[in-house]
Amino acid sequence: MKQNLAFLDSVVCDRAQPLAVREVMKASVESFLMALLAGGGGRAFSREDYGAVAEDLASLKRLVCSCGEGLVTEEVVETEFAAAEGVVDLMGLPTEKLIDEFRRSSSSCTTMPPMTRRWCRSDANTLLRVLCHRDDDAASRFLKKTFDLPKRR
Image (cartoon, rainbow, N blue to C red; front, side, top):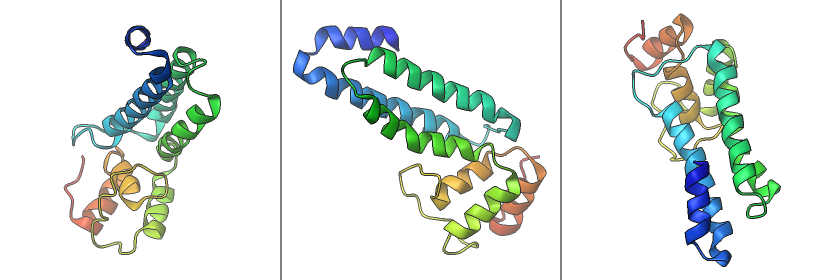
């Protein structure tokens, strides 16, 4: 990514560089979250994976800060990564807490929440996806009982 940002910097005119780096940053954060939350049924994360996933996101943030230095303000980087960090933080919560947050955020606990096309810590669809990718019995039982989804194990 560092090489690609350097190349982008060399081919884009000076005025367009901040916008180009900002768009690459947004796309990178969105891709990171898509891989976590919409990567398919084969993805499974335990609560213990939280540290590694959080470190991966922090590494991406450091990369953007170092490559975009002078082109993207720290405030813009913080704002863009804040939502992603909130979603990743969900992975560190106990399953029971995730279920409680899902119930609070969902208007109906018996129907699938609508796709919002945005990842957010308080979004019912995001919470459901974290639960779907949670590799533990409590999440699997909740999903089976509530939505009749197949058990992960």
